[in-house]
Amino acid sequence: TLPVLGVLAAAKKIEDGESAFYVQERLARDGTVPVVKIRCMKIDADTDVNANLQNAFTYGEDCDPRNTKLGRFMRRYELEELPQLWQVVAGQLSLVDIRAAPQYVLGFLRENRPKSFEEWKDAYNDGRKPGLFSLNIAVNNQRKDDKRRHHYDLLYARKASLGLDLFIMYRTGMRMINKVLRK
Image (cartoon, rainbow, N blue to C red; front, side, top):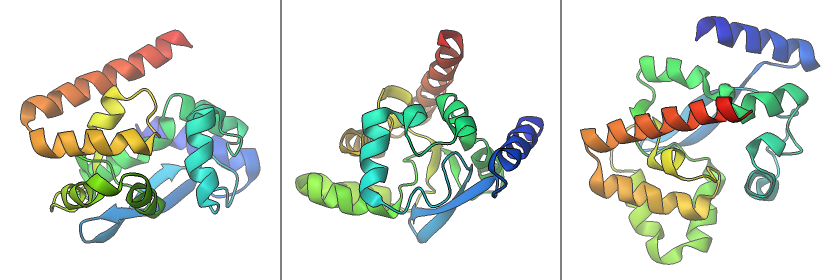
C-alpha cells in the first residue's frame, strides 16, 4: 500500500496545501487509540458533532459536503483508511474486531440506545484492540449508521470466532470489489 499511500498523500497536499493525514483519537479499552487516515475533509470539518452524525448518514460518506474533491474519491473507495493497515502491523489495531468509535458515538448511543448501551459499552471495552474490519462494515450498507452499528458490534462480541473473522474479511473484500466494478 505504500505507493498508493504516497500518491494519495502527495495529491492531498497539492489539493489544498494542508496536512495530508488526519489523526482522530478514538475510544479503546485503555482510554483512546489514535486512528490515522488520509484527510478527506476540509480542515476542522469534524468540530460539529451533529454534522458528523447527520452528514455521513444523510449524504453517504462520499457525498458528504464537508469532503474535498479528492476526499470524495477516496471515501468512495475507502482509500482514506489505508494508513490503518500500518497500525495493524504496528499492533495498535487488530485486523478484525469491533471498530474503534469516536468519542461522540458514545454519547449518541447512550441517548439513542439506552436499554442496550451498557452491554455495548462492556463489549466495546472487553480488553481487545479495536479492529480495522468489523461485522458492521462487512454487512451494513450504511457503515455510518451508528444506531445499527451497535447491534452488529454486540453480535460480534457474542459470536467472535475465526470463522466469523474470515467471513468478515471475505464480505469486506467482496464489498470493495463491487465498489470498484460498479463505478
